[in-house]
Amino acid sequence: MEYPTFFLLLSCLLPFIYAISISGRRNSRLPPGPYGFPIIGNLLEFGPNPHHSLAILSKRYGPLMSLKLGSRMTIVISSPDMAKEFFQTHDISFSSRSVPNAVRAGDSDKYSIVWLPAGDRWRKLRRITKEYLFSVQQLDASEFLRREKVQELLNHVSQCCTDQKALNVGGAAFTTSLNILSNFMFSLDLAQYGAESTQEFKDAVCALLEAGGKPTLPDLFPILNSLELLGLSRKENVNATKLLTIFEKIIHERLQTRSDSSSYDGISTTNNDVLDLLLNLNLKNESIISQNDMKHLFLSLYIAGTDTTSITVEWAMAELIRNPKKMEMARSELVKVTHNNNRNIQESDISQLPYLQAVIKETLRLHPPVPFLIPHQAIHDVDVQGFIVPKDAQILCNVWAMGLDPNIWSDPKIFMPERFLDVKIDYKGHDFELIPFGAGRRICPGLNLANRMLHIVLGSLIHKFDWKVVGNCRTQDIDMEEKFGITLQKAVPLMAIPVNL
Image: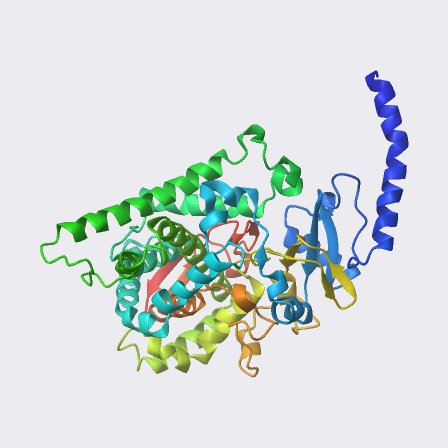
């Protein structure tokens, strides 16, 4: 058949195909949603900032919406009531994961606590993180490490004051978060302020997060999963392998140190860090956690813990610099609790700092670090309020849209921490108006550590320094544009000049 004839026939058939697809939607029990085009579905409505596009669509079709991204059925929820339906009422049914093709780099989908389905392997890793990594006892025992790393951050910022040099706030927060985690896990620093190696680590993490948030052809058309199209996953494989190699080397060196120790008796308490705890578990029973499990667990925790924490600190600082009166309110509270600056903020102070807590809640409302959470997937067909969510459908929870919903929040676009002073809303997964860390059985396992880190890092930057905008810009002119990926970064890094108080 000649090409002109082929395209003429295709153009004649398309209206019929489109009509059939519309009829199929009308006759189904899917949640409401926009009609899609053949093959591509609703891709044209997704846009470069999908959290914005889907928020607009949900105003028309409601808080439970369906659409097709290529051939992939996607369900979008954008209200607290719907989030509660999915992550509490039907939590088990939606506890699987929709895994982006980029995440399959390094076999993360087979070993990562973030992406594994909620089966035996996932439950084992979840129990280990709860008992050995993020228990209250373990976090209390490691508080001195976080205090030491925050002091190093303050020393770096003080040097910037002396040099009258602008600070990359997000970059400095990333280095601090990375070293807090690396000392907690391995008793060593993995980063230095301003070092090129630190930037390479950050770039690798950000590249994986950005790629994971932007669907590739195999994500849109799963039938293509077995094809190596144009080397689409090559870059993600390089970045994942780079990070996994770092952790594999650390594990090997620790094993060598333990075997060389003259007093080595099989069980080590020399470092008493997470790596020693896991290696001791491995010695007792390798089926509990293998060395391969360890390096993938470390990869998941680093990607989830470093970028999200630094992003939130950067957004909070940007909002506070743009709102100097609110910065002063937060600082006054800190000065009072620390008795007129006689000491640094400590984790035991957090409960006495309601305004600082409100600042962080308000930042997470306006700038959730993961705007769609990590995508869930339906294990089987589920009836939700009379609609059918089909098996294998991808579930996106638009927490960004929930944070900007005027039906939930008054003046939702205004940074107003005071809104949280009179209401008992937290982000621990019980109040569905604010679930930046998720909810239900797939809630972020490191939430308690993130809570401590956010308060002491942000509180220390506010407590010890005032901040000026670079150049002659007004504070209101700070660029607040977003860069979409799995995480929601500032498109333009926040550069600010610290001033000693």
